[in-house]
Image (cartoon, rainbow, N blue to C red; front, side, top):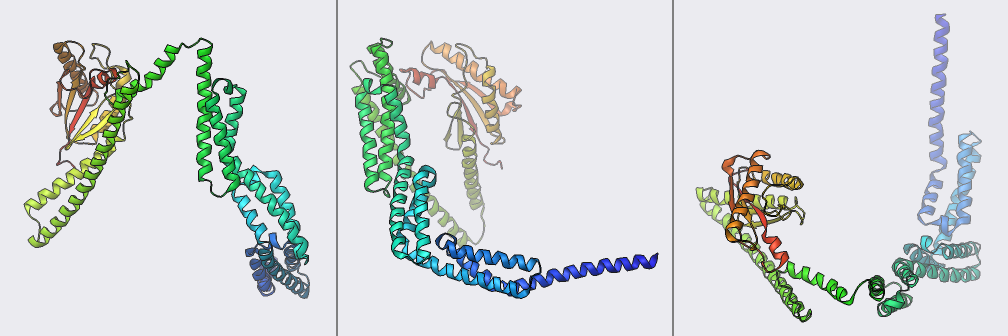
Amino acid sequence: MVAKTGLLRLVILSVVLLAAGSGYAQDELRKTFFKDADAAKALAESGNAKLLAPRSYERGMKEYRDAESALERGRNIEYVRSNAADATRYFKTAVEAARLAKTALAQGLKSRQDAANASAPRLSPEIWSDAQQKFLRAIQLLERGDLKNAKRREIEATSLYRDAELIAIKAQYLSETRRLLVDADRARVGRYAPITLGKAKQLLANAERELNENRYDTDLPRSLAKQANYEAKHALYLSEVVRQVRDKKLSSEQLVLNWEQPMRAIAGVADIVPDMQDGPDRLMAELAAYFEGQANELQALQQEKADNEVRLTDMAEELRALDERLGGATAERAALIQRLEAQARIKAQFARVDKMFSRSEARVFREGDSIILRLVGLSFDSGASQIKPGNFDLLAKVEKAIDVFPRSELTIEGHTDSHGGDALNQKLSQERAESVHQYMINAMRIPTYRLIATGYGETRPVSSNETEAGRARNRRIDIVIRPNLDAT
């Protein structure tokens, strides 16, 4: 029994070794017979012979697959060698044919690539398919040596490719405008806003003309199409307004008042009294002057920032030079470095806090080393100082902002607008500041020694009390954070 078991193991081991040897031998044979075929196949594929010389390339692939199959099935070695050699020859022929096609059919190849780049297969599939058939026929004729007919087919294919490319480009840039204009015609916009709709149609025609004349310079057509989209949408809006006026759903006076409202809102942002008793011209001039002043101020601030950066660089150079002359650290140098590091830290902390709040929740400012959280989203009922549950989420963000500045001192400032008596406003602002103060102690667990609550009434406005928007900005709670410069 033991002898039989040993014999069985020997037989199994022999079979495994024989199989392993057979696989190794087959790999060696493949390396020998397929070396030239593999190189020729790779060269044909890199030369795009599958497209440009399909007949020779497919013949090469057939011989190549036959050689692989013969090797796997253990066929006669000469048969494998013959198939591999034939595959090599066909692949080399395909390489030469592809090179000829790249030269002879260069125009067709370029127009084909341009159309593909414009997404013509997706945006103009029918014409693209026709062009592909013509181009494939040109390649077949060229591969058979019929250059004359190949060129004729190439010209036909090139024309189709260019048509497909232009349709695709127009679809990319003009399809939305065309859709809008169809919607406008269905809504009978031309009856109510003919001028604006006509402008949109003219802009579309101009964009299409530019594409027809120079399809590769798309900047101007893109701009014209964008303007056409705007005018088409504007025409849809205007037609609805005019329809409401004609149907007496909107009076002329209501129409004018509605259009004045946005200017009033903008005037509120600019803290300008919206005087339109004689029309909008005066207010428009004031707003233009205001925004021009803002632009000039911004330019000056940017210049000042650039100058400060230069000065800081010079100071850093001076500090290094001073350090080299002194030969080591001094108490003054150490203090200066600590101060600079603290300011850099506060700047980074400010940037973190600024990102915590949306514009409707809080505005974040810096005054020197202090950070001001102007809680525009914190509201109280008229004449009341109790914090409403709807403000809890905002105050939770305030707590996170305070945590960014460890051991900082905090001042809660209450402010009102000018409406109401001075004493009443002072009392109300103090009560609201103290309400927030108490919330910070109870809900945020901030020690009382870090907190101060102060009411300023109407004495510190940040906007004009002559406008509703300005008064809304003056009714506020400000949290002033004074960072501990020694905190890390």
